[in-house]
Length: 99
Ligand SMILES: [Zn+2]
Image (cartoon, rainbow, N blue to C red):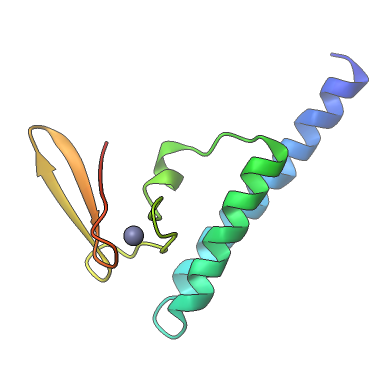
């Protein structure tokens, strides 16, 4: 592996760690400060775009791609199974996503 590739791997590793942490924090902050959770989601999106790290599906399902709300299922997002697919509805902007 070239040195450049190695560096890229290294950066990607750190970015993924930060994203993990931000989602953790977003979940902790949510009950008291939902706005802060949304801000963390914004940071995650920025990080992923800047470093071109693809977000895992499990991450993509944790926030609204339309209004940027951090999802806590049952609180601000509805999760239903329809035709064997998971449908997540954002209760803030009513955007629906199927997975
Ligand atoms: Zn939304």
